[in-house]
Length: 298
Image (cartoon, rainbow, N blue to C red; front, side, top):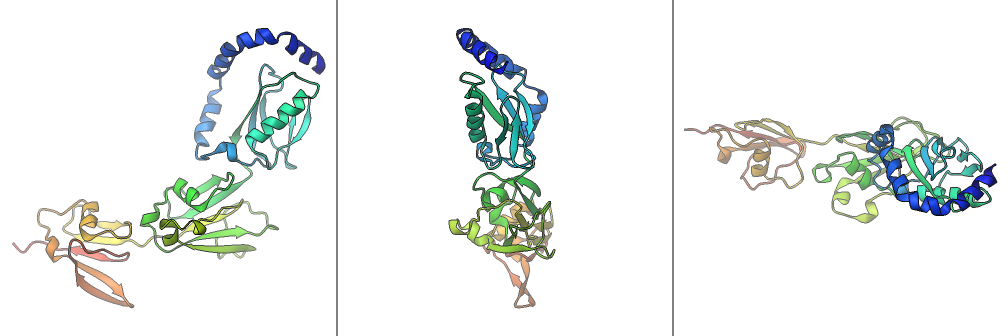
């Protein structure tokens, strides 16, 4: 029956070519809303074509004009993708374009004539990294080919020029299967890699680590600058390195009508001792500073 299908496809090829444009538009119009939502939810994978497939990933296979072959498939624990007619195909470690080529090659081997195959990923489940700590969007992120530390930190909403200290990457050893994030002090068999955030901000490429499956990125709590007194929005602020007093006051909403910026004081820990110092508007504030803006005398 499968070989007869291939013959029929060849005999009707001219009609199919004529109908191609209209058929394609119809298929696009009928795309399930659930697939559109899935694409929206997984858009954080900046380059899905570079993603290496693995067990439990869910892919959508479309074989043009072959509804019985098209559908959603889960990559099995052994890394195989099982499709009607051709059976199991190795999928683990392949990109979407590579698995498309493999399926097309198998279907062309006595089943269909010049099959048109498209594969997209619906759910990422196999390769992932974890981000914890002080970022806007901590969580799990899919791992594409050659994903770097800076890329994942950017996805997670980290602002490198406002961060201080070291970021820690906890990397499980090859013989350990990890199902979730691992912190440096949890006692698992893992390597701990520490990277100075100043190096990343400075663009030192050699310090931008290529991530591996199961890595946990730990972003430390950032020291803040505290602003009190005659500003419109007193509070604690994480600010980029090099921020001046004038810029900080602007971030805090500006002075009140009674603020005296010329009499501003900073309380800063120096060599373990708390020091009081006068700041000018172009002086740079430091993490941990407490800035006090007093009232005008008259």
